[in-house]
Image 1 (cartoon, rainbow, N blue to C red):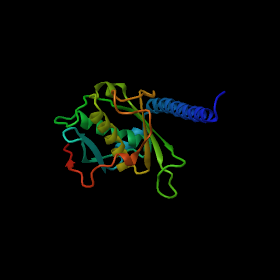
Image 2 (spheres, one colour):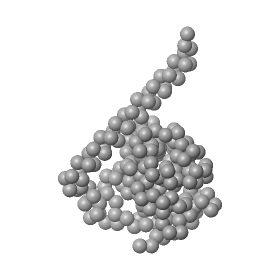
Image 3 (tube, rainbow, N blue to C red):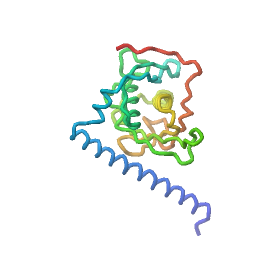
Image 4 (cartoon, rainbow, N blue to C red):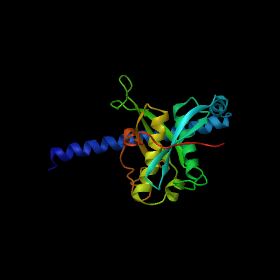
Length: 213
């Protein structure tokens, strides 16, 4: 006879599977919508190109001392929050492969897309429940990611810190790889859990580097 504890555990796991399936379906639908927008002339991209530049902060990993270095940039961002998150992470990944990078990952497209959803009982400000960012990493980034708990964790922390610093409403982050759940990034960093954005807490006075054109 199945104990009540096992029944409760099974129910919780079933709900988690249903929730993740719903997220994956929404990701697929959003990808289809994006293709339709591109076929119609990509108005969202045109709006982003016309938007005035704004100051952003990218938290770039430093493998030499396992820290995050704050890099300031001026960037025109789209108004759509999901597209804004994708643009932020695309620029962060570009910093990974830049000459002299302290966290070298040679991949052109590291993030497929970012899906944002409300967190009903999240850790946002009063009246603001916060948002969960589901970050769909590319298989190419996972393949190029140096294996090891420190470099893998720094990759995740840098993305979490960058998202939260520029979009404070993001309070939780979950990672997929090519739209699929995965146990680890490259053998170590856990991708089965949902992270609190506050876990990616850079040093109080992080080193700051101004980007060059």
